[in-house]
Length: 213
Image (cartoon, rainbow, N blue to C red; front, side, top):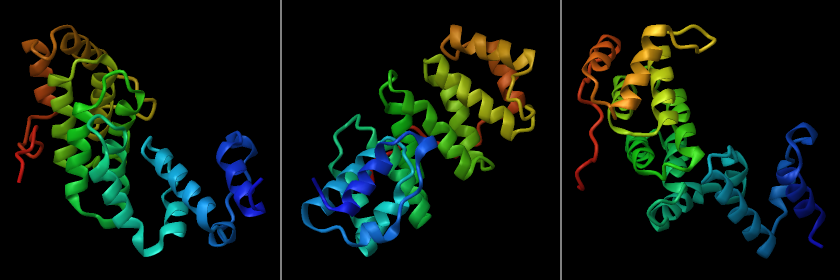
């Protein structure tokens, strides 16, 4: 049995979303020792999967927040989910574009069976959806990444940002056929590429892989 504050935090983290009452910041401020470390580790593991607990983690880490996330990123093994999402949270705090570049590179390399890979595209869209590098990134996925769910997400968000979709996000027939052709041909169908070119031609802002500095 832990402290009352620790128990409340644990319950809030595991309870069904409809039953959550919200965190109390004072609960985080009184955590000490093993309880403090356990909550830090748990929040980090959730954030590595894309969960939005950056505010609560910063309550615990204070000025060390960026350093801890950077160290976690450096120590992450190849293929780790944190390689995709820790750069996202670092960018939101620092606004340093190198983190988004890292995130995009890692999305391309990530395990095709991992559902969070596709979710990463929508996370990027929230931050840079209106920028050419995001459009180039979506185009790269459509031409080079095999999985349908990735191509579908890339086509949906690219078309939305370029004004081809309404709020229901249903692809018009021409774009749906384009997507099918790109999936079937692994991005090589020239008719589909011609349609894609009308949506967006590569501007050269997304490069994969980036050269090591």
